[in-house]
Image 1 (cartoon, one colour):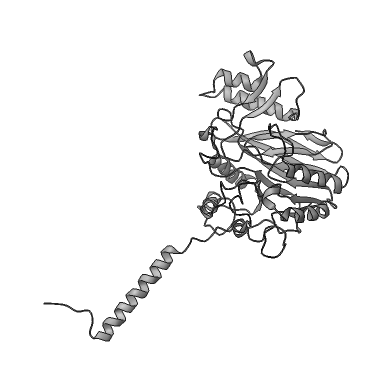
Image 2: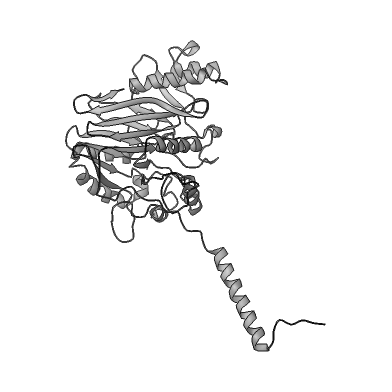
Length: 403
């Protein structure tokens, strides 16, 4: 006995057609590329945000760890989850208005890298990726690092992840620079400029950024704050790139005298602070400890001049952090501790904070108020938690002072 699901030849033909259509739909659905994550920008180019106080989270080098890029580093030293978890917790206690990601958000700018980035920050940065919880999320300001467009000079995928970012330069090209103003307290305005220091990667767009920057820094209001990936001042042996040097020369030439307040960068995968022109000059913060395996920090010889010199208050914060690790349940070796402090057999020799044993992971909080600026470093402890380790404030009369 046979059973037929078709009453007529035409009926059978219709069923087969529907089945083929269904199979075609399913194959297209399966093969369709997953959409790129879109993150909500905190402010547009040339935008203005006005509030009584504005609180900003700052961190760089949040890309995933890879064996190729992190060869020779202690891969176990990565701290992405710890840093992002602390930002999430702090955002509940002391809400942030925005997060600035200071470059190297992805390892190689592939679509899969950007999708992983979307998931990585789904819990804290607002956007198209569904959050894992109902906690308040916040918008972002991206700063392009050398990894973020490394396989795509057009930066099209980055533009898709941060729709609306940067200057409109036409012809389907993406600008990776922008400026905006924050107005706080009694209507005091602060000019922020985001620049791309990757001169080689920008190609012909470099000239367009140069022309734009000359005008962007002319009216800084209460003060100018530069956000960039590479660091113009750091303890790295390589020194600043030609792109960084040229950009900072342009700022010095076209911004009003003594108007530069801070340069916030990432560059190295660690944390560094400098006041190269004294308390009345700009503070330089390397906020590169956002999660990739920490690079060792060269501190110079204790008590002797070494250039560029780390800010004294930051030196004290580093000593305190090293001592916290020394008192941990499972401390680093005494050799590592002595080398970091320039003590014992390392007395009189260059101090080095070993990134694999004492990582300077963490993030920075900047607050703008009617009185001035505040900067706070939250650093990773041996327990995996983070705590306040160093703080500075800027006022018109006193410049940058530790608190």
